[in-house]
Length: 421
Image 1 (cartoon, rainbow, N blue to C red):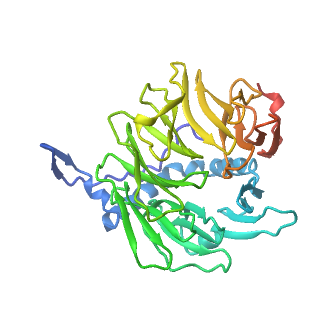
Image 2 (image 1 turned 60 degrees about the vertical axis):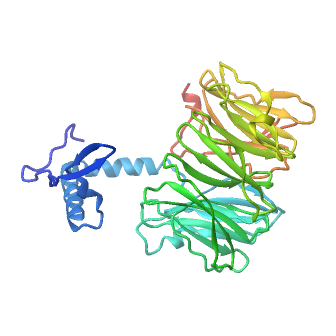
Image 3 (image 1 turned 180 degrees about the vertical axis):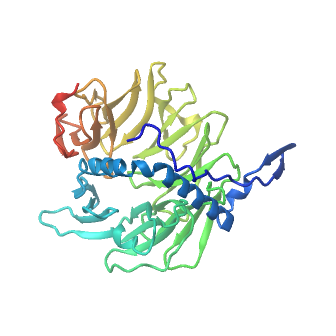
């Protein structure tokens, strides 16, 4: 490969035309000579991009053979035909798989019983036909497992359209909702909450929609341009949360997932530099908050009166430990912390009050929970990898502390971790 590839002498780099554009805002005058490049439908923009691509191709032409060799070598390390680890949600196990030569995964499920047959929910390869690009956004199944809500972008500009599919018949429902960011099903399996974006791609409006109805009710609109919103249902399936978040502040509202027509109630009003997140178990909310320090603490509050006046401390703020998150289950909590820069997962038993840390085999690693969709379980699933150990998925028994390796990424080409340290 040439150390500094040069284009043929006859090829000149393109020069974007300078067209002065003046914007006056907040008493300031801003001049942008390249504002016209924002207009992606302008034929001049396409012509300029094509000229850039042609120049790049000319510069890189001497390296084409090396590019192809690099691509083939990288591809030889990847197992193209593969399957993810199934995770349980209700009566089904959900997973995705890939096939050699195909660009996109296939999303499937099967009943959580022996010898059950596979059902393909979404084959992105089929959906991508006729499009130059495809990206999957939201993917959520109803409580009764009959319907699938999902969103697709075919533009490459993160503009997702929401669809609803009947998994029993394979047919699509009439719903087509543009610019959707996040979604959450109510427990009636008919009411869908969804958040849409504005022109600046800020998630700002929450709607409620009952399938089959023409009505899309605006539930909440975030007026502060510093904040974006998101909607989700708790793992307990008891509550639906809508959170408003800026870079330094947050605010959460909630309703019972069994009462989708109810008005959302505030947990704690936003205030400067106060960030918090909320989850649910039993009669309590569990709130990770930085109201007492930058490393966060954990408090609980009754669902009926969730305001700060009723917060009870469970894990105090610590100067040397960052509390990052908490996974709640019916009988346990897994607390995600960071100590000395390294992740730590600590198990708490609600029945006994005892705690223990999930031990890791290497001094430097990355680990995080994954595929934990079920609430009533004593098994916690996490992903683990290090600089020498390929990505691995484990099921961890929260009672016995035993772990089961479910899948380890297969690196083709003869990789041997014992050769590295």
